[in-house]
Length: 277
Image 1 (cartoon, helix red, strand yellow):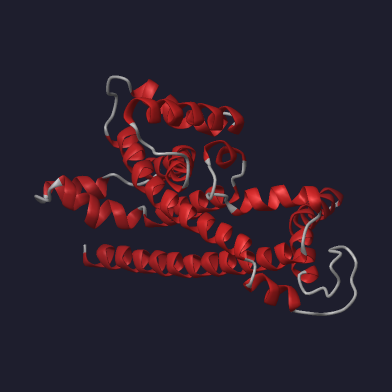
Image 2 (tube, one colour):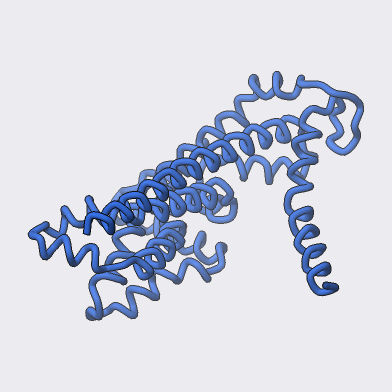
């Protein structure tokens, strides 16, 4: 009993360590004082001032655009990589390919950012593209390292999936493309959603890699926040962070509902198939 009590307290302490600072950030976003650590009364004026802060809003819009595009590209490329590693068996160069996929997971972000910066500079000198560093280079850089996370998620889902369903469909005459879109894709849909959300979060949170590959006029929100820390955090950042938490929480809630419905529908279909069989 003592061990269970200790583990319970440790669990609650871990949750408090993670979520209490976020709760305080939300509370102090309604603080009337400019000092973010001194409560002087309830006010929503920082949300009103945030609407007129073009620097923060432009950076937030850029971050969301980059995160959405890079997450979508990461899901596409990561799904292809996961299929290659799980479904194509032992092919020549498989070990090297798998190592290249997982390398960004353990590579320091400073090394990743520096290597991508040198790559973009060399490509601009030799090919004339990309013409300067901006939203394109940030998107490519974020796709490069977030794709690895998506590939690992998809690979794990495919490895644990029952392959007899795909084999049965091909025995009945379905082409590989139809098998993928009709059977495989719906079964790995929860992993695709989870991979997209993970890639979106990693891209939205990145500051190190973006600092290397960004240029004038392409400053992301984490870069703006990081630079503003040197001069003191404005309560407007608390207000913006609160809105971001609300958007992300809403997205996770909607995604969980959709995934739960799909899982219930899949179980019903399996039960009907068993009964009809």
